[in-house]
Length: 366
Ligand code: HPA
Ligand code: ZN
Figure 1 (cartoon, rainbow, N blue to C red):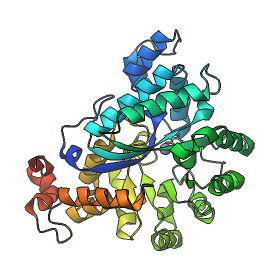
Figure 2 (figure 1 turned 120 degrees about the vertical axis):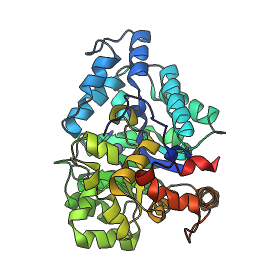
Figure 3 (figure 1 turned 135 degrees about the vertical axis):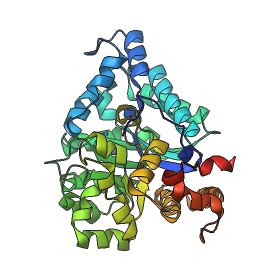
């Protein structure tokens, strides 16, 4: 698969599909060009001479290799304006990519070595969310690193207290192997006690057992969850409990967790009734925004119109918005698929024929 460097490709039809992006790391939306601009503005030296060299470095061997570069990139974010610019650029890109609702992670732990206060960071992020409110609906999720002690996660949770009314959920990411969700039971319990939804990265590079642990912790969503495909009993539980998986196909490809998108378990899990969703993860580093993920998956897995519709509706079910707002989103998705649920509409049917005759189904929706 060839993807253009660093930008949403946007020449395909899935841009026009009203979509959610429920698993995206704000820090992972830092495009190389902005990264260099901020490094210059803040007088920070980088191990790469120019954005092209950074692009070259973005051929990752695995999750840890990616995270090393990702954390390095975070060092350029030091002022309130930097966080405003980063957030605003992501929201503008997502809105023009057809994302109608996004839920993004942000990890304050990454920035405790930088010179900015948490107040400055949050002001920058929330000002951009406010300024973009007419163009895109947005929820913020705090997240912590599983490679650090649970006490530090609890401290981060407490430090975010002044912004609790603006936070929808808490999660956990970072290098997965050897760092099972169960080790963070106290953190997740504390998040729950404070009334938050909880989610956790599990089964990305780690085993199905980690996904099972996440289920036992009572999470509201599992980020990735791919490994569950190897455990039929667990698949059954995910389907029965309707615990959504926020899957990120291009991320999985870029991190060599799959050799080819044709191997991605998304379609198999969808067929078992699991609430699978499509998301972008770290789009600047993995060279794929939301619509790129939809298009790549549709091409590789030959999704039917009914499956595309189900995935879009799953995004609405899985999001953390109140029901009244979900009703509106559901209608937006169904309007984009006028034939639903009977699938009689020719626009929708042509989505499936796309690869055969090159027809652009959703481009006729204007
Ligand atoms: N996996 C785990 N942690 C992360 C990721 C990811 O893909 N991106 C940012 N933090
Ligand atoms: Zn992630």
